[in-house]
Image (tube, rainbow, N blue to C red; front, side, top):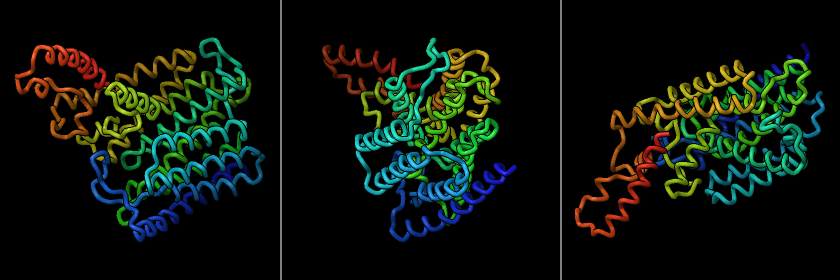
Length: 400
C-alpha cells in the first residue's frame, strides 16, 4: 500500500509540474520568438512553440527524484546524466539544427553512460536463435545498437500532435504496470513519473489552444533514451522465469510493445536508402503522413496508430507460447500488411500531388516525365529503361 501511494504521489506531482511548466515554456518561447515554422516536411500549418520536452523532463526529474527516494537505485544518477545530455543535445538541435553526425555522437556518449556506468545492458537473449547468456562485448554492442535505434525511432515518430507522447504513455504504462506487479518498485516510480509528465504535455499538445506546444527534439531524444532503459531492464528482469509475473519471450514482447516506432523507422530508412537519399533527410513517408494524406486529422491519426499498436501488444501477449522467433516473424508479417493498406488507398484514390516534391517520395519515378520530349537517343533510352526497371522495384517496395 505504501508503494502504491508513492507511485500515485509521483504521478500527481509530475502531472502538476508538467502542466505548470508547459505554460512557462510557451510564454518564454513566444517572447523569444522560437516558434516551429511550417514547412514542406512538417505537418504543422501555423507557427507553434516548440521545446515542450523541457516541461516533460522537469516533471519527470522532480517527481522521480522525490518518489524513488526510499528505493535503492544506484544507477539512477547515470540514467539522469544520460537523459540530461540528450535533453541539451535536443535543445541545441531545436535552436540551431545540429548535423546528423553530431547528434549520433551525442547518442553514442549517452549510450556509453548507460552501458558502462549505469551497467544497464543486455546479458541474455532468452533463447533467441539458440542463444541465452551473452558476454560483455556482444551485450554492449547489442545494447548500444538498441539504444540508438530507439532514440532515433522516437525522434522520427514525433511528426503529428500527440503521437510521440501518446504512444510513449502507452509504453510507459505497460512497463510500469509490470515493474510494479513484479516488485521492481523503483522503476515503477520512474514510469509513473514519466507517465504524468507526458500526460501534462499531451493535454496542451493535442487540446491546447493558446498554450499549444510541440515536443521538439528536446523531448523526443530524451524520451527515446529513458524508454530504451525501461526496455532493457524489462528484458533483464525477465531472465529469471521463476519470479512472479515473469513474461516468457520478453524480447519479442518488448518488440511488440514498441512495434510502430521500430518498424516505421526501418521502413522509412530503407525507402530513403533505396532512393539513394541520406537516411537522415526528413520526408513524408511515415505512416502518420500517409494517414493525413487520406484525410485523417492529427488526433484521429494518432489514436488510430496507438490503437493499432495496442492490438499488437494484446495479440503478442496472447501468443507468447510461439517463442521469440515465432513472435518476431508474426509481428513483422502482420505489420507489413498493415503498413501497406494506407499506401494502397492513396494510390487507388489518386491522392498524390504530382507537383509536390515531398509527396512524390511516396512513388519514386514517373514514366511520363522520363519520355515526355520523345527525343531521347537509343543509348539514353536504354539507360532510362534500366532506371525504369529499378524504379518499378522501388515503386512496389515503396508501397510498404
